[in-house]
Length: 558
View (cartoon, rainbow, N blue to C red):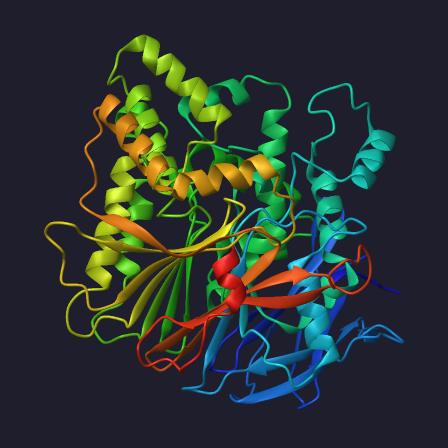
């Protein structure tokens, strides 16, 4: 009999009543999802590297309703699990015009005893109170798994499989080892239930493959010269396609995807997927990992800021020409939506010192101060992780121009939000133009939230606080002058944060109003064990017509 190995994950849900549910079984079988309202869908598993997966499509669900569902493999019920302490998994289809709650964050290490995990805390709160408001979608903005920094338990598992004295040591090396990371993360009971009942959208960041992935041309050449890198990057892209990317797509997009058809149409799709991943690594323009989702009158553009890079120093860009063109084409027409969300694992607006340091370093690497400084710049770029939008000045200007274009004029969205993670703290930053301001009609904000579950050392906290300080801003400007960097036309102010902790942000969008909430995972004061709860740190409107509310008093202490 077939058993459920991983999942279910509720992935795609739209207001037209379509949905997809992802599962991994322990052998070939037919996976079926059966809803309490009578809706059903089924799919035969496909095989990758000895593993068996299915993405089950559903259609005809009723907008404005929630229905419990179960998963059957070859006709045998396998989910919900017997004697589960969690409520039944449900599939909720939003009603047209209803409020949309978007929760987001990034950087989640595998749970360890004694930690505070924001996803665990969210799941526990929802499970304890079935009437609690739950997210309509969860955006996971990168570093869903850490291929280069594994838990002690996974390290022991790797050591039993191979000699860790051989490269890449205590990091994952192949597809099978990637599956271990997903089991460790997604079999966590609270997270498993949460992902079965709240739809999720994903995009990768560097640790899903390796720290500082695609930092520079020199970095990439060095990695490609190692004997283990090719298998690592191919396995990373394969596992991302299976576990994360497929679920980002609508049923219609899946039906039109030639690779998905090829993998499902053969007894073993491993080689087809390996060839695809190898081609994606060799030529980033050959594959698009970015995607668009429309939630009523809210548009989400999830942007690949890792694999689509152009690393040649003479034409360095965060997005290649095709990716930049795609992003431009996906901007909503006037009047088409009330809110535009741009999901970027890397923040657009950073603490000012870090932004200027990255621009200075990029100028040094491009030769603004000569070869010796260029060599120094490359070493610094890798050591200090200077590879955000600011380190790609042409792309920073492009993204700024697109945001201004989308947020200006009659019919512009009420808000344009760039949702990001990566930098292990949370903050709100809003741009302004000191001289010639564009005619923005939208409220534009950089909303950054990370980590979901990770540690933030005290020196890192101090460094980020300094990066936001007045003296840090002055130091950044001095660096920019040394690098002969042309200052951007815009500046920005921090209007919230910085906050440190394991946390999630939630946007509540209703009509043309928007509210922002930040919740941190915490234990009761003085306790090192026991239940973890989400504590609201910030709750405030982003638009003048949002429901009145107050900033939580704790905001002023962070």
